[in-house]
Amino acid sequence: MGATMKVDEATIKTATKENTRVNFEGDGETFSKAALTFPESSMVQIPVSHHIPGVTLIQELSDPIHGSLGEPAIKATDLTPEQQFEQSQRAKKPVVFKDDKEQVTDTDNSIKTAEEITGGSMPEPTDPAQLKKIKPTPKYHLADSDDEDEDTVETRKSVKTVEKRDKHRFFINAKEKR
Image (cartoon, rainbow, N blue to C red; front, side, top):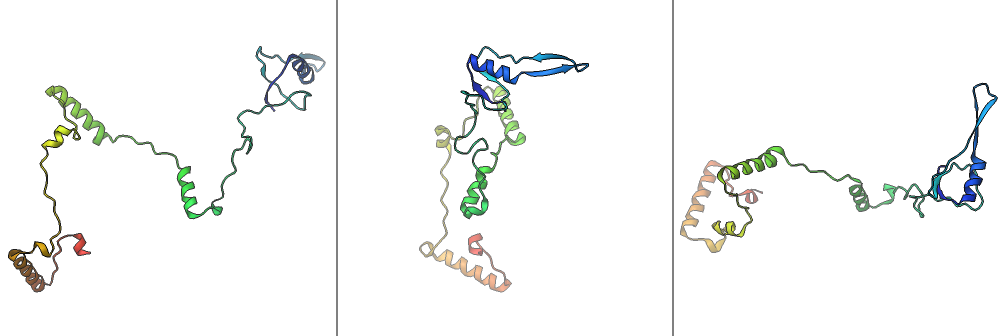
């Protein structure tokens, strides 16, 4: 079985006596006794074909609940669709991400070279000092009736006139088109 077990000297002698093999050589009449040798430590590998009194075999790396095979496989038919999805996600191997050569590696090398040539350093875009330099942009919103004035009313009327004449609808954005 090749199991690992803790043994004392008396057990080693018994195991050696019971597990020694006789090998015949050449003409079939000459034989040599192949004795087992054991290391100094108490953990040894002994080929065991039957029970040795007073010796308990220890199988390392075995799950005491499910045995050496581990947990039984889960049947997908026994799971809800949500559990099936969860199980499939857990079974996937994690993706190993690599930097794109042109987008990341070459750009980093280019920035590094430029910094060496100029003697300066390129600031980080999230640096608070750099963020202060950015001008605030206007916030755009869709116009409603509160934003109406004479010019917008006249513009909308002229757009409607052209749409009717050309039988073509003009959309301001994708939301309006939907």
